[in-house]
Length: 258
Image (cartoon, rainbow, N blue to C red; front, side, top):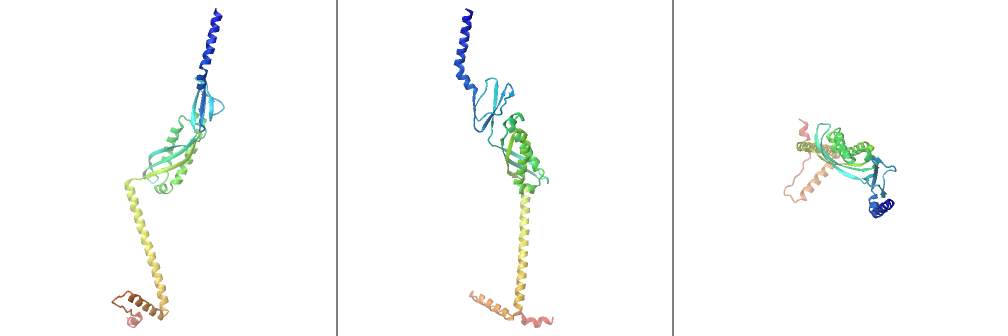
């Protein structure tokens, strides 16, 4: 009788396994996409073989635990940071960071939250880098500063398995009083340059007139022809007043006595 009971229990367990097998197999099968990897822990220990994927992999329910890691490039905005430049100017700067996970195991084992850690590190790096630059360096060398930030971030996040691909500074905001002062300075600089250019033009014109006068004085007939050309230009406009230029040589006898 006891053997019959044991046989019945064994048959029931086998039957239960057969009935639940389709459901348990679905619980054991997992799928990760082409751009994902799965890091598996068995009873708290990392399984050998590295990350799984892409495709199908097996786990043991209630024993294995897995974490999916996305390998695609991720972007995040650095909120506007108040920065004090090297020449004691306060400004607000925001940027965009592009990064991706290069080593899934390091991203899980070496840091608690690699995305949040990268975000906070980018904010700190932005303030530190801009704090060593003057206002004019920031405004004129944004691309070089972005490359410097990218290099420093990439070096700092390399132990976490994170690769920083690109950093872009999107906006630089200055106080209103500083903007007005810079606008006034730029306007004064443009006016000074305009006056310098006008003075150089006057200098060149005076030099050209001196050369022309020297050339004309060497030939008395040339100055007479110039007088006739001037009269021709005046009469072509149908003016009622005719001007006769008087050669300055007529007054040379009066000026010598003085």
